[in-house]
Length: 207
Image 1 (cartoon, rainbow, N blue to C red):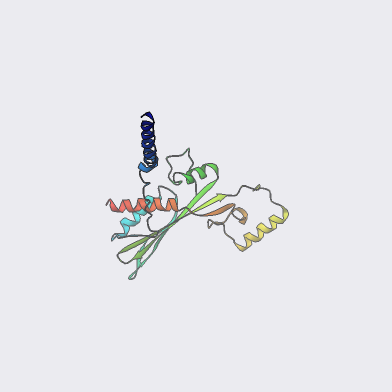
Image 2 (cartoon, rainbow, N blue to C red):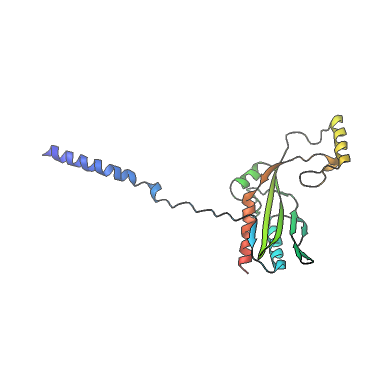
């Protein structure tokens, strides 16, 4: 009799085992939120181009210092696209949570460990029924692998040659003595582009 009870208990535990394995904490965890990427350029249906431009400038000013802006303008019967260029801005670190140019996660950590800067070029392109807002944020890493102030006679000659040719740095401005830029291009910062586009979209929707 005892042997039959033991066999029955063993069979019950054996049958319950797979069920217990199927109930795993991971099975009840909520699915990660779906990240919806905005189109870049982003289409906005805005009839008032002055309002649109002011919202874009106010948004971009939260991240960068604007160097040059050319508003969308009407020339004859044709709308000419607008363009905004910013000055390079040093990337904000983990110790600067109030600054928003470095997005949370990798970008904020990268700017804390390396010398990072960003600059933006934003275009407002007239389109049927509205405008296309194109945001390009370029990220650069400072090259500090070699002393910047040690220049040999050969290098001095090269610098004079660069100056005579009028070469420009990657930022589009002349470096001291015509020297090549010590900033290395790191491509586009798409996370900040998305943040800027999202803020512009939210501003326009709240009108």
